[in-house]
Amino acid sequence: MPEPITEQGHRVLTLWQGSWVAAFAVGILVWGLIIWSIIFHRKRSEQLPPQVRYNMPIEALYTVLPIVIIAVLFYFTARDQTALMSTEEEADTYVEVVAFQWSWQFNYLDESYADSDGDPQTRFSAAGTPEQRPTLVLREGDVVHFDLTSPDVIHSFWIPAFAFKMDVIPGQDNEFQVKVEEGTAGTYAGRCAELCGVDHARMLFDVEVMEPDDYDAWVAEQEAQAQQQDTGEQPGEESGQQTPDADTAGSEGESPEDGAVGDERPAPADDAGAPAPANEEAGR
Image (tube, one colour):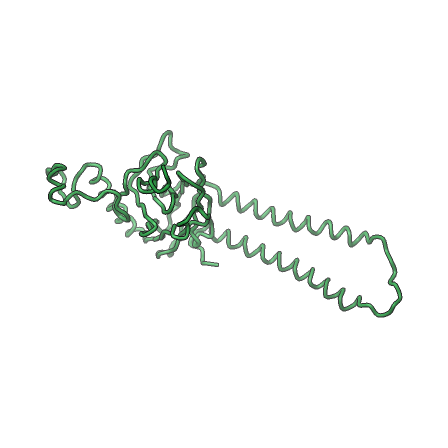
């Protein structure tokens, strides 16, 4: 198992290990009984062994023991599922994950959809393509709230280092949140875990966990770029500086390209939140 980088991931790992311990215990018991029967109840003569219709203690054990095992596993599963799906803790970062054929868009919001009266405000976005995977940037120590949505087919948002994945279903907005642990700065893999079409295997993304100072600087840069996009300023322009008109910018090659990937803001999205190129590929 990968080393979890979230508090919730450690809970999942503990549940998984406990389930395997229980499975091995049952397996050892069953294998032991089989081996005991083979060794001590071999045919030794032609005499027919005594015939019995039933054995109440054994039959009671066969009934009670499975019920006890299932009840224990159910208790720990329900307890951990309740904790994993809880979104009551106030989050530090809100990210809308838009899964589309065949890449991802990450919209950094000012609040979650559940807490918003309407649509929450998007601070900035990052989108990718099958050729150039996007990067989801998070901060150490943050509680991160994820809203999951899809405009086309069912996908599955999976970060192995979270030890957790959740389906992204059209028409049903799923949500969950995690607490990223301190000391986990680094780059991790992310992918779609649900067969969603011909390019499913290329539906990859990176997760970069930053230290707080680095993350704050990155967020400030992304917000500045998003503001420049909204106001029509060119990157590097001073506030209040005259912006060249569209014809001049086009002739001088100074206009930023639409639909940029990575740190640039993605192409305009439709009502479901998917980038324009993705809508065309999905037949929308």
